[in-house]
Image (cartoon, rainbow, N blue to C red; front, side, top):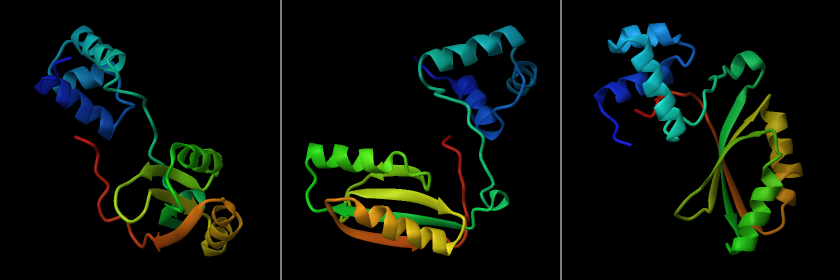
Length: 150
């Protein structure tokens, strides 16, 4: 699928506010509602738009601690990788998980209600996963830039 300037505008507006009506979006990108709807459906069917998601205010939900947690496994075979992912997939504290290059194998974005809950997560959940060599955590002090993708 070729993405043109209008498609990029549509994506930009939807990233800023996915609740825009088709009419509002069409007006913003100077298209008829039917042409705008066709483009959005094409972006969805081609997998460019994967899903519509709300951005949550963690603080208002009582979540006071966010952290970046780096994990290094003793060895990184396919079975070790799959085992680790299976262990963390149901941890409610894990917001996102990434496989990375460098000293560590994974970076987890973790969110908890307070420092005690974060400590308990590290001690009672992460530390109990077999095969972990090291855990390095960094508390997020402030979100200074939160960008959309385009």
